[in-house]
Length: 133
Image (cartoon, rainbow, N blue to C red; front, side, top):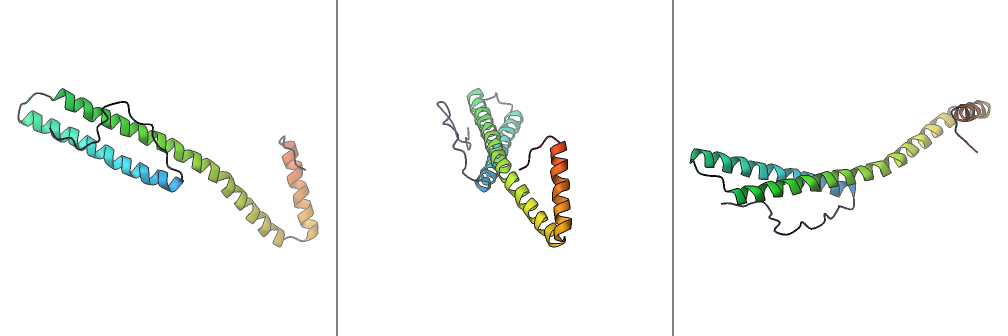
């Protein structure tokens, strides 16, 4: 039969994870396309088999399902890896926003108002169990 998907005769090679969030997104998009292609091949082959009243090519079907499963596993690994980039970026984004907010508030307060706001923030932080120097 026709085998468009990538076959893995031996144990699959370890997945090489992309080194950036953008590369993860690109690999995920490619994997989603490959998964869709394998599913279409399986469905098309099954429809053709049924219409021609032939028996299932068990070896081909097993290879196709294995290829599908491996692509799905790689997609899950890349998605999990992408989440690590997002977690690393989130604190930086949050810190940058806090710095900008402080800058805006500071520009709109006189020294006495600023000192009062800083003291309120320290008191609130301390009451929540935080420790600020």
